[in-house]
Amino acid sequence: MGTLKTTLKVESTDLFPTPVSFTVVNNNNISGNFNGFNTVALTTSPSTLNVATIDGTGCYLYLQSPSTNADAIAVGYAGQSNIAGDTGTLVYLSPGDVAFVPVGVGATAADIEAFAASSTATLYFFIGEK
Amino acid sequence: MATLKSTLKIESTDIFPTPVNFTQINNNAVNGTFSGFNTLDVPANSAQTLNFLGSIDATGAYVYVAAATTNAWPVYLGSGLAAVTAATVKLYPGDVAFFPAGDSNGSYNLNALCAAGETGTISFFVGEKA
Image (cartoon, rainbow over all chains, first blue to last red; front, side, top):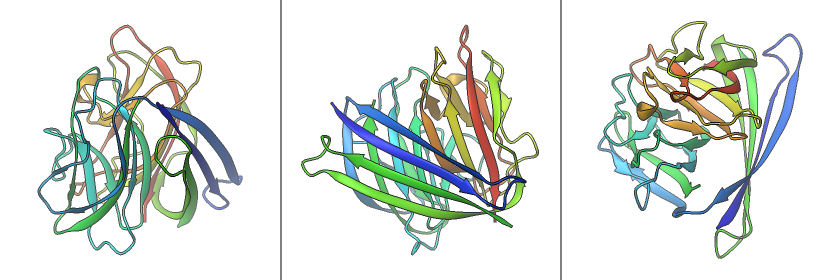
């Protein structure tokens, strides 16, 4: 087991009538399988990100789409993610976007897939089971 | 157009052979419909729409979601969510997520749901991308 500490600060001076700024710090326990920080070259065919099927407890997922990408990236569960539909897509990353998400499908084990929207893209990611 | 600045810091001293510590700062342009920071009580088996001001278009939206530490059960998120078995995000009490949501088809709806006999509270923000 290890700890993945995340610090998320969200700020805006012009989105709301009053400026917003807050920080959330979490010490996330990683107790199962984890995948190091990896880079994967994506096409429109789904690529599985996890090294072993994610169990029902779920996992923490860090995703980063390099700003040099020319295409969007969709991430979702195997068999559910469908970029052209409205079912199962979890994260939709434009070039430069970053995400940190705890994911899980009820108590069901599942794989996490990523694919490029229309051509190719590079994804930098980490998956760690809770 | 307005900016939602996100700072995500990832650290670990014990997951990997070498300690990891990096920070990703994004100035996320929010150009379309956006909600304030809202609190929502999520009931069992009744999907609640987070983008209550309108469907998310094909450019997607930035989503911040935090599950209250006082929750007793997980809260699930997904697109067009009808059951937790179709969920993609699983927030245990205290979990926080920041991710761009959507798909290339547009008309994306992000729902929150709890399993039968369970409830939870989340705070969230949804802001459409530029």
